[in-house]
Image 1: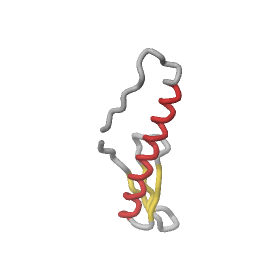
Image 2: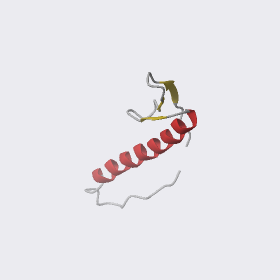
Image 3: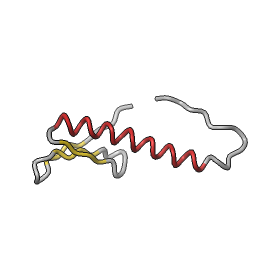
Image 4: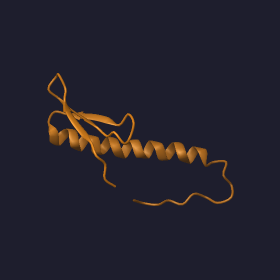
Length: 71
């Protein structure tokens, strides 16, 4: 998957990275490269957390177990 991110300089000299498609998915780095590396990790963690919330809601679904699909 591909996501668009926004990089903006912070007042303290750090670079803030945000992924607008994922509300609250924000990270930072000392430079652009570090900010991009960190936002990639934040995106993975955000998606994992959302999947875990979805799995909790499926616990009462007894008709068919969920199927894992890798993207």
